[in-house]
Image (cartoon, rainbow, N blue to C red; front, side, top):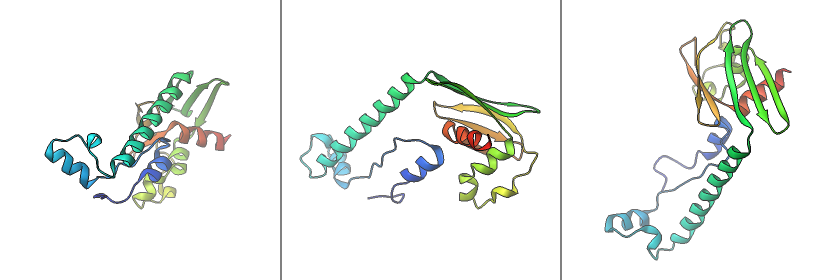
Length: 166
């Protein structure tokens, strides 16, 4: 049963760069167990085996993400420097890299949210600037733009734009 439609995991991976996503369908049997006070994983339902595999995969994915966090040298930094642009610095085992990205380029090149909202990326004004940049967990930043919009950009997306502009 998918009350909100089939999995959007592929969209989440593409838009936000989150590698470990999982679909947790609602099981009618899980609901029945909850209503009767029986833990679903202690029941003898046929869907129990697939749920166990799903939760094992979920735990493995979390462990992979934690390992990646522990092995990374330092979190990237993303700032706006007036007259220069968006300055993104990445630190990894191979050293450090810095990319200076014109704000309009980031907005136009990472436009999946704009496209979902039927906004033509080429309509973004050339003089757009970030008003506020806020870290979102360990994978992204949220940017409030001078046109009143807010967008989230993963570090992978920002690095990709920086490399493309080199």
